[in-house]
Every structure is written in structure tokens, then in C-alpha cells.
Length: 461
Image (cartoon, rainbow, N blue to C red; front, side, top):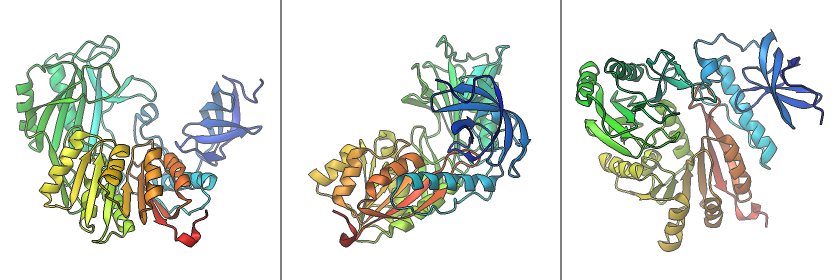
């Protein structure tokens, strides 16, 4: 079969749109070409690097006509890192692009063509991440390096100043790396599976400034760990806990299951809204708490919870949104599969003197079933914040069967959100969709979708 483009050939194209990952889209004879770092409205010279049946991929050789929204990137490594894939575009324009991408998904999929609200951005979209996970490797001279993996590879790009990571925790991680180098501590090699240090992980409470350090090792013992602890706490008094995490598996998963406390209590605290939260190494906590607070307030206010309501919080993590809702509800049931997160959620309820929440550990699909079928606990409001894969069929079926008056769906993946809404819209009116920019300069986005049960006369049988 002959295609209108050939691999390793050059073409001049007009960029007619941007895709969901921020890539430019061009067409030649109605054949689609995806071009990273190109912006709608530009004319570019490209080299075709891959040709498939339905589409091709190209890379920019020359920008002939630049978009007025194109800016010079302020990051030295963004093109190779791939993390901030929208860093070449004015921030306000990236918000508009994200809104349009969600709207496009809705227009293609849903009967109810709900208008997506403008994306809520950040006043200061820099150094917003409260968690960093740095892979550790060696350069060509055998010197330890820390950074991020190059896009689609496991080559480590050393990073000296990441514009989305917290400045203090970046300094702490570099300090640990210097200690490793100074003491000739071995570095893990993915190919040989030999060597010790795999990752340095840091977390910080944005409101409390409490810092957690985790050194991930391929073994049980870390040489000179007492000296490391002393040096860290002498240089960084805000470090409240230091841990070693044991990960001997041949895996891309960063943290192993075993954490050993070297200093402190094994957790830090942060404040979100009016609540204090304990954060442990394995528990999920939003990486951008400034925007998370906005996101949760939108979700909770949209639910219009009263003291007569029983609320289910599916995928509750360490209980952040459960606690936000507890203030208004009769009772909240939080369900989460990660055991450590549930233990932390229970501690967070005690810490905040909240006694109308019950946290349950297990698979959402199973626990939801158990609550409604075995214990006859029937929610009239359901809140869900699932992982990227979205809701499972059983959970959607339970919602359709139970018909809670309100369903608030917080999603980190607009594609699976819209897929699930297409099933739910038979019984529910989608009142609005509010995107929140949790990850500035990346193509990622969180959305709050608010669903209201249709009145019986509006339900088609």
C-alpha cells in the first residue's frame, strides 16, 4: 500500500490542530501526521520518522511561520526530558488548548454536548510539585548522576534546576547524591541488576515545610547510613523523617514494599484546607496541593452534601476529600486498595477529630458491592477519583442500579472520563465539567464532572 508520505523524506506542512499530548497535527492528502512541539497555525518543514497505516510521525526541521504563542523555553532539558511537553507555549494558551482537547472528546462521544468550563490555572505555575522521584545512574566517566529519564528511554538526563520541582527538596536530593559520590557507594545498573542506590525520593508539606527523604536501594544495608542521617539533619532542619526503601525487584516501579525508618516517625504532615494530613512513603497525595485544594472544594461544593446524606468516596487515598466532605455529611465511607493509605486515612480522621468517616481497605469493585449488598449501606451521593484507567464496569453498574442523586467524578484522564460519562448519561444529566490545571506545562489535566440524577419523566426507557 502506498502512503502520501515516505519515511526519511522532508515535507512542508501547515499545523491545523493540536492533539491531546500537545503534539501538532498536519494532513497531507487527508493522511494525518503527528509532530511534537508544533503549534496550531504554524508552517513547518518536517522529516517523516515513522509511517503507519493510519498516520505518520514527523519531527520539526525548521519553523517557517511561528505561532504568536510560541515562546523560548526557559528550561535547558525540556526537549529531551519530555516532562513539560508544553513549555514552548505561552501558559495561558496551554490552558485554552487543554479546554479545547476535553471539549473535542465530549463533542465526539457524548449525546449531551456539555460546554467545558475554562481551565482553572495557577497564578504561579513554577516549582509546584511536592514530590520528586530521581533515578540515580552513572555518566560516561562513572560519576553518579541524578535527574529524569529521557523521553521514551532509560537514559538519565542530569538536572540542575527543574522549574516544576520544589527548590528545597531538589537541594536535599543533590546533597544525598554528593554523599553517595563522596563515600563511593555503588549505583544500581538496570542491565546487570548489580549496584545499590536506585532512586532518591523526596516529599514536602507545602504548608508545613516538613520534608521526607527516601533512599531506594537494591539490598538491605546502606553504608554509612548514620553519617548520612546526621549530615542531612544538620544541613536541613526541616527534614523530619529519613527512610531507606528496599526494592530488589527487576521492575520499573520505584518504591519497594519495605520501608525502614532511619530517622523520625516515617511520615510528614501537610495542611490542605482546614485539615492536617499525615503523608507516608507509599500513600498517594496530590503532587500539586495548591490546585488540589481548589479541585476538592469544587467537587465538595458541587455535591451539595447535607447532614442527611450518606456519601461514598471511591479511591479515597489517605482520606483527603473524605475529610473535606465529612464536615457536611451524615456519614462518609472511604474505599481504597492501598493498605498503608487506609491506615494513614484512619490516622488523619483521628488527627482532625472527625468521627463520621469509615475507611475500608480493598478493591473498590468488591467493597462497594459488600457495602450495598451485605451491609445494606446505600449512598445518596458518590464521589470517585479513580486512577487513569477510569471506573470499572461493576462500579458503573452499581451506580446505575443505586441511582444516587449526585455523582461527582474527579478524573486525571479525560479520555476515560468521557468514556464512562457516555454510559452514565442515560440516567444522569452532566451539569458541568470543570478542568483544573494540576500539572502546568504538561499535557496532563484533572477534571471535575458533576452529574445529577435525571427526573423520572426525563429518563428514556
